[in-house]
Image 1 (cartoon, one colour):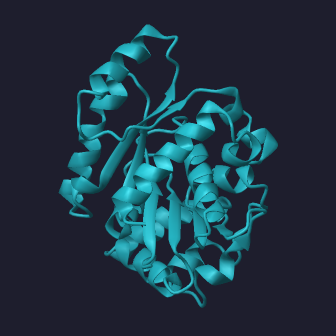
Image 2: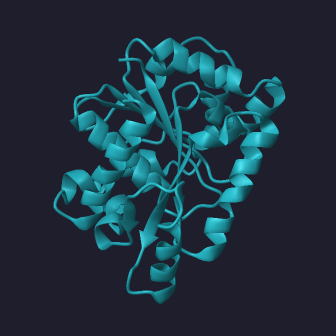
Length: 251
């Protein structure tokens, strides 16, 4: 199969972006797909959650600036079979600057991914929050942009900003946006009301990742929920999200 690229993006942090990226990568790898999780967030949360050292060999500027070697040079094996990780360290903060100065933000990212296409089936990109040059570049090379959305009115309305960004930058068609409900707590009336409104729309995926202790423990236990708590509600919703993602991205 041709390599597919799926990105996790969001306007702000703390919405379950990284936990989703880690769990989807684990599901893909466990299904036998040669999977790469590229941690593009300077906080390095995905790197930490998979118990890897926050060290990017040669630094981010060299990687995206055309230095020798590609993703295979900097990727590290995780504890999960078939799952490689490009870790993040403090140098990842420089990626946004390098891409902004390049004039064509998508070119370095596209080149790196093209060099790995024969060795990978699935690439999952964990992007930094916000609408930046990194997100613009990632959007231009992705088959699907997954956007976790808290079930509250303001985050739902903020999706329009994301669509406008894609249109204004001409980086990708808004059709590749795939929002889904994240961190839902159905004990809260606001979450229940917002979920009901979302279900009347056609743009959201069906999965709804719950706010749960199994997800909250991920940074501490450093084991994906789908591995450490496979029978939990969160794991079931991550698997549902992966099935929808695979269908939409042609995996």
